Length: 250
Image 1 (cartoon, rainbow, N blue to C red):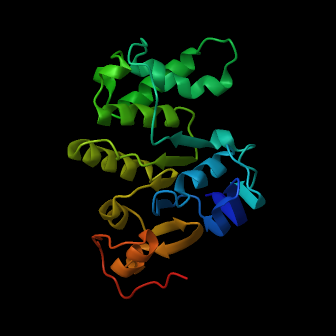
Image 2 (spheres, rainbow, N blue to C red; image 1 turned 120 degrees about the vertical axis):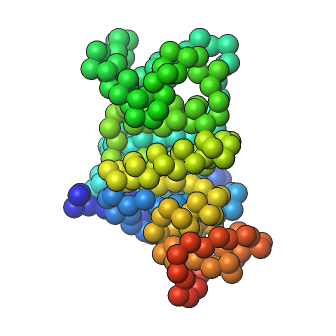
Image 3 (cartoon, one colour; image 1 turned 135 degrees about the horizontal axis):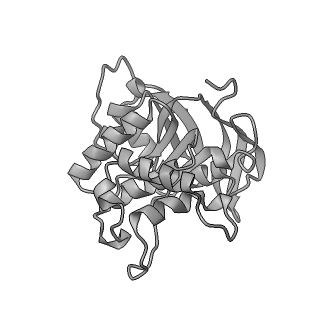
């Protein structure tokens, strides 16, 4: 267990031009935790992940990952984006996509035998051995998602960030994904952006609510009124576990 928090935000403010996205966001996530990020579209969820990755810089405040800046510790992070853009005619197979996770170590060099072996191992762990040489474009949505998770895991990150990982998969693929995530959560710090509130309530102990301001709530404290206030409209919420009271959203 790391002595420093896996993620620390202190008084973070960020805006696109004159449009504020995050205001005075302060929170800490401990090493080994699995949290979900929830909130309305445009509330700042994806921006939050990009700040953690060092792809964006805040206008004010301080961010640290495992005690150092996001840029310095970027290689400790695996990232699975919400959307991927690829040419379906580009001839790239599953193993080659996974190996792309090692590209930060290469400038005009070939992949090492060690990296190729690691790719095969991660592909096996994600249940994709039979598809290892299959074209990426020929896979189902759920299989593609698992390939992207394998790509994020090949460098053995300490932190895994997933942006809406179940948004474009069917029920069977989502169930497989949940099993994979539960297994990964035993060894990694995981932050998952999700609109699936039943998934949130069933799989995590704390929830990061983002809508310009950021609040962390215990999952048991979530209520229908809190979720509706966060999203600005009535939302269906499935509560797993025992709720002893609503958590005030300040």
